[in-house]
Image 1 (cartoon, rainbow, N blue to C red):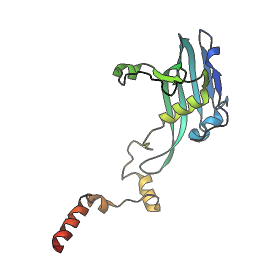
Image 2 (spheres, rainbow, N blue to C red):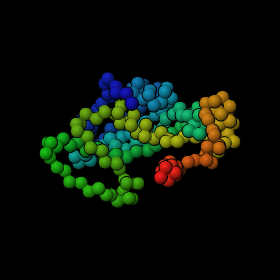
Image 3 (spheres, rainbow, N blue to C red):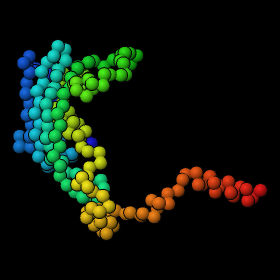
Image 4 (tube, rainbow, N blue to C red):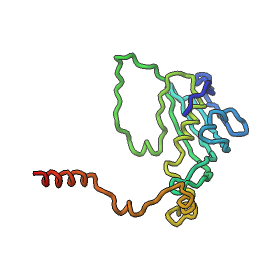
Length: 195
């Protein structure tokens, strides 16, 4: 990820008590330069609401984005619409001094993690919308995308990639995978021979 020169920020202290709604899209353009490295010109729309909740802020919304992906199986280029909802609690906290301590439990209720908001600690009321949106879209990108649900050895794109030399498949080497201990067995045989 590349660091942008200036972020699109808002001051959380200026959010009214009833909250404030934010909408961004490719057409509105405010976040286009921040999302170019992950969306490559693809369409997107994001809508969320920030509402003060005591000393914290609730950030709740959803996005939809057209992502250009490459099939992890056959290297086929394709587009997929990614849709995600998010629910975050933003808490502004000052950085602890070097010798400061903060007690936290390292466990949570499983149901809360699946259904409740995600806790996000920030150091300043200046909240970077551009960084936040960039991260939630990047995290939604599939880890091993496939162009088709049935992409396997019979996929025409996979066969083309093999024929063109873009991918290599050596079925014999798959069947004859060596154990890392084979080297030790060979050393043992050589040692026995030499004695």
